[in-house]
Amino acid sequence: MSDLNTITSQLWAMANELRGNMDASEYKNYILAFMFYRYLSEHQEQYLVSQNVIDIETNQTINEAYKEQASGDDLNDYIEDISSALGYAIEPNDTWASLVEKIENSEVIPSDYQTIFVNFDEHAKLNREAEKDFRGVFNDINLGDSRLGSSTNERAKSLNRIVKLVDGVEYRSDDGKDILGEIYEYLIGQFAASAGKKGGEFYTPHEVSKILAKVVTDDVEESDSVFSVYDPTCGSGSLLLTVQDEIPGGSNAGAVKFYGQELNTTTYNLARMNLMMHGVAYQNMNLSNADTLESDWPDGLDAKGIDQPRCSFDAVVANPPYSAHWDNCESKLKDPRFKDYGGKLAPKTKADYAFVLHGLYHLSEEGTMAIVLPHGVLFRGAAEGVIRKNLIEHRCGNRIYAVIGLPSNLFYGTGIPTIVMVLKKKRSTKDILFIDASNDFEKGKNQNKLSAENIEKIISAYRERKDIPKYAHLASIEEIRQNEYNLNIPRYVDTTEEEEEIDINEVRNLLAQDRKEIEELEKQIEEQFKLLGI
Image (tube, rainbow, N blue to C red; front, top):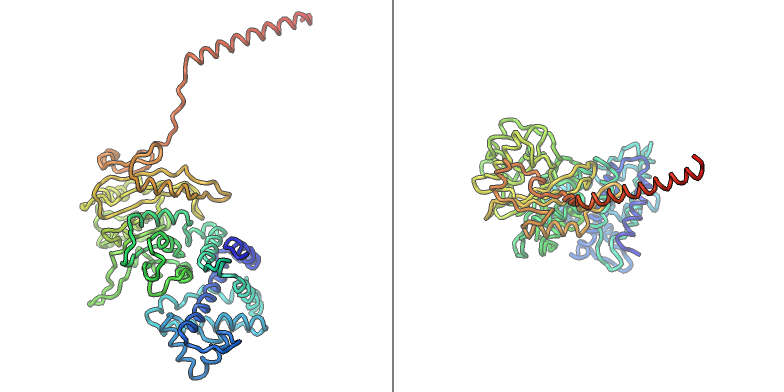
């Protein structure tokens, strides 16, 4: 039976068996990249057939027809046509079908894999618009890693086994639904769980992503206009894709434009693959491999040759590294992202508010931002206290819309409890909603989980925006000022259980009854001693 659970569990079991002594965070680069290569190759086949680029004879496969017709002097014409349409192009001898055929016929030589990826990169140069989305996307496949084998032939055999494993995956369920994206997402999550601390660097648990996605799309209605979403620390891109799932009509082609920036090159490559494996066309994604806090979002050169940052994303979502180090040199006070918040920068060893201000700067006036942060941002003083106060007392109104406390041990690599800070620019009030969801979770073996009911309870309270005993509190600006801009959740939501009132008279009666029983027992013991002559 080809249901998602069966496919993914079998695939994960086989992948674990094949990876041997290779770390999960590294092995993912091989299996996920080959899945992506298969996807691109089969996507190209669909284009060749649907657009009548090739003629297929009876009893002839698409790959056989492609090999036959895209040959000799005509090859370059086919490659250029495919590249202009798809943004990439794969030669007939390099297609997934050709690679599998060579493996089955024992015709693969160690250099074949290098040739495939070199050719892919060369053809990625043909389409200037798409080059940044495809070029170098397979650079993380280390063909010379000794853990694949001690010789080039042994390494080629290991790669062959991975190809055969990926080729055996059924990309459609029994009802005909394309489940490739779900399979890919499942594997990313499994690799993140196995990678321990490293897993948190590239993956946000889906339940947490759903909370952020629901928050930033809460007041979005279905329309003909394109919705833009930005993640300044996009990891594998899963959070961006979750936002799409919550937008009315978001699954329609071109309805959502994705923007993301990621510092780690390996993770950036993973994000490119992940978005495209979920059907996102290269025209609808704009991802950058750079340090978000050092290299602000480049929106292209203006007439003077200067990069101008884009500031009008409909939604901003982020799960940045917690309390990361950054270069908070004084010159950054001139940076438009950071300059309006009391003349202070986020501390050198705690970049949390730098990410907050960066995301807020890129949020449209009508948009919503949701960011995962450690609890310390709510109450720490010094520079962070100044920035927090200036966010609340901003000349255009309080920017902090809500604070949602999450349970501990939700994320890979850290057990600390976190919060979701929600920010808006355009508001009619200055209050802040506090939600304490820290006690609502399902206990897992290694990690806690948020159930659908837990998530719905959070979102329901967020929408109602009113006091809920021991769960939510809508704090006025006066209350926040009285607390000297300390936003620590227990100051606003009291979750302590009242101790049961003690009835003193009842206690006295019980003690009197106990004394009476003790006296009776002592008399019985004394009588027994007399009978025994003691």
